[in-house]
Length: 327
Ligand SMILES: Nc1nc2c(c(=O)[nH]1)N[C@H]1C(S)=C(S)[C@@H](COP(=O)(O)O)O[C@H]1N2
Ligand SMILES: [Mo]
Image (cartoon, rainbow, N blue to C red; front, side, top):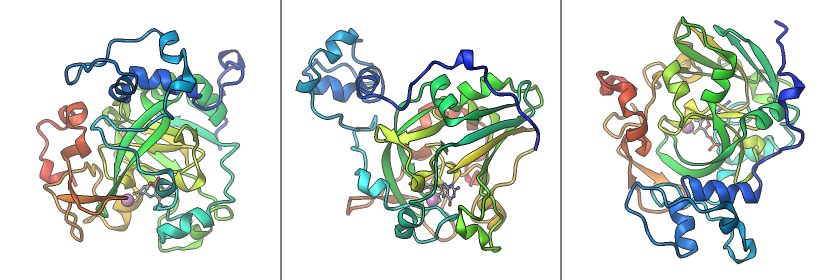
């Protein structure tokens, strides 16, 4: 394997693990949870789309004990799926095809230490430890909907950082057009990789502009803590406007390429799983209608939103493309 340089230790600040409660409160005040936090502390409502006026940090944290426990709500006002469901209803074929079995079968999977290589068409190929990534790129709270092509969805409070920050660091070359993501390939640690019916390792890919979109994150945690093995720890990709299978778990390699990379599900069933896989209520999967979904924890189905509700942030990337063909 190619020997890759590491980031100099001078660039690493000592000690900084996951998002602290204080950072969460500040992040919530400034970002997605802003409207909610404002509501909690009785601040006046602001017009739609406008963030609440910035509060001085000291005001926001003056009396932490008087604040309610952090409430996790997405920007549409939907509460996060309970931690118990997020961590016990998991698609993770390296461990099992049975969702309920995944947490148990992955419970001894070591997520630390974790290493990520960034290679291919970049000026500075690099290898990072998870600690280095977290310290350098400062994960923040990102509360996203996750929509699986099977027709269920969740709201998950990730802890992660924009992939764009990492890509800028390695300096993509002019001919880089796509990004390939490779999951860990280790039969001893992921027992179901012994099954030759699947093209291991799990792989995914994005167009470079999709990878650089601010919504695209590498997640190192959820619910303010570490990323449990069953959710893709040490590190996983999260692309909230695409079907869940694009959000690859246990990422160890990121490669910038000129050609569109092959992906796990597209290789297995190309007529069922396209490269783009943008959430689209108007294009059905051959076996599952995509017009509605079941939010885990709810009974009634809800309408599926175009681009999973992120059309404003991502729609322009697909201008002029035939959306019906994007599956
Ligand atoms: N490496 C890997 N990543 C994966 C999968 C997988 O089987 N292996 N399943 C995908 C699918 S189909 C979904 S819906 C999401 C589920 O993520 P969650 O268990 O955190 O909700 O992970 C995706 N990432
Ligand atoms: Mo999925």
